[in-house]
Length: 314
Length: 224
Image (cartoon, rainbow over all chains, first blue to last red):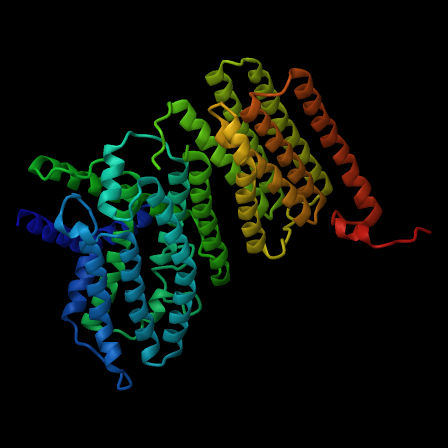
C-alpha cells in the first residue's frame, strides 16, 4: 500500500516538475545570452492561462483532432509514472521496461502526427512528415543504446538495470560512454531541442513540433505543451538515472527518499544547464542535415555495442 | 556477461581503446581538412596516453620511449607539418564531399565486426590483459585503409595512411607490449620521412594536374 502511495507521489512530482525543467532551461539560456528571461516558473502560468481559455475548433476537425491531446498527454504521463525517478522498489517498476517506454512514445507520436494532419492545413502535414522522418531515424539509435546497456546489466527493466548498476562495483564501462553520448543526441532530436528543432520559433520553414500543434487552442494546446515538457523530463530522468544512478533510493525509508529526491533534482538541474549551454553554442541545422546528426547518434550507439562485445566480455 | 572487476588502470586502457576507435570513425566522417588534422592529432594523444598506461601497468619502461616518439611525431610534428602545407596550398576552407557517407560508416562498422572475428583466435592464445584490444587495433588499421580508398583528396589520404600507422603501433603495444626498439625507431623515422615526402608530392601533384583530387590522375594528359 505504502509503495502504491509512493508511486503516485513520484508520478505526480514528475508531471508537475516537468514545466519547471523547461522553464529552467529557458531561464539559463536567457542568462547565458545576457537577456532578462522569464522566471523558471513561467510555464506554470502559461499552462494555467491556457487551461482557462476557450477552445476554438475548425469545423473541419474530426474526433481524432479532439481526442489527440488527451491521448498524447495520458500516454506520456503513463510513461512518466513508471519511470524509477526517486526510488526503484515501487510496484509500478514491474512495467518500467525500456522497450515499453519506446512503445509509449511511439503511440503518443502517432496520434500527434495524425492530429497534425487532421485539419488539413499545410503546416500541420509538413510538421507531421518531418516529425516522422526524425523519429524514424531516432528510434533505432535509441533502441541500440538501450540494448547496449541491457547487455551489460542483463535486463531491459529500468528498475532492475538501476539496481544492478547500484549494487555492482563501480567501474568505467567504455560502452556506457558511447551509449550515453548517443542517447543524448537522440534526446535532443526527440524532444525538439536546438540543432534539430527550435522550441522557441514559429517560423514556417523550420518548425517541426510547433507546426503540428499550430491549430490547437486553450485546454488542448495546454495538454500538448505539457506533454512535450513531460517528454523532456522523462528523457532527462532516463539519462540521469541510467548513467549517474547514484542517489536513487533502493530502501524505502524517509531518509533515502529525501536523498533520492535531492539527487534527481540536482541531476536534472545540471542536465538543464548542459542543454542550455549546448543550445546557446549551436545553431539550428538544416532539416536535411538531421539524418546526418542521427546517423552520428546511431554510429555512437553501434560503437557502444561493439565495444561491449569486443572489450568487456571476457 | 558482467565485466570482471578490473583495476582502474585497465579500465582506463579499455576506455582509451574505445575512444581511439571512435576517433577513427570521426576521421572517416570528417569533411573539413583542418578539423581532420586536429582529429588525427587527438587520436595521437589518446594513443600516447594508452601507451603510457600500458607501460606503467606492465612495467615495460621501453614503451615510454615509443610513447614519447608518438607524442612528438604524431601529436605535434606531423599535424603541424600537414597544417602548414594546407595553409601554403591554400586549401584550408576546402570541404570534401564524401559520396554516400552513411554507407561508408556502415562499412566501417562491418570492418570492426570482421576484425573482431579475425582477432578471436589470437585472443584465445594471448595471456596479456590487453588482448581484447587486438581487434580494436586491427579495426583502426582497416578503417584507415577504407579512408584511403574512399577519399579523393591527397591530404585526407595521407591522414588515413598515418592513422593506419597509429593502428599498427597500437596493435604492437597491446599484442606484444611493443616492438623491438630498433623496429620502432625505424618505423618512426619512416613515418617522419613519409610526412615530408608527401608534402613535396602535394606540390608536385598540384603543379602537374592543377588540383589535389587524385581522380584527375586517371585521365591521360599529353604534355606538349
